[in-house]
Length: 114
Image 1: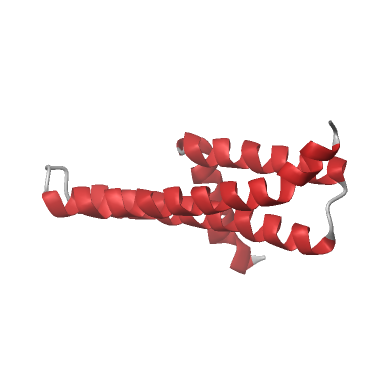
Image 2: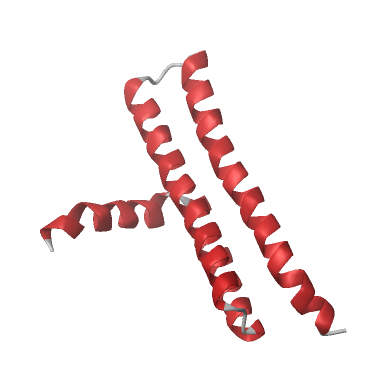
């Protein structure tokens, strides 16, 4: 259990202080529910799990970068802005990748409904 102490503390901090992480968790839950309802294939599940994980990983890294930058300086500095902006870009890229994966998987299922 000692090995899980710090990761659990990190999760608690994210849930308390990072609204974007909570939004990503809600979106992930929605995608999981839709996946169950459409009874997607095992291969599709793998892509969904990878997509969800990628977004959550990037959000954790982005938040970590923001905390470190804020720790280092309270003043505006272009490099601090660059660090935060590029970390948030990682979240955007993962989110766009996940959106494309979701579209590729779910559009055929949605079209079958009509």
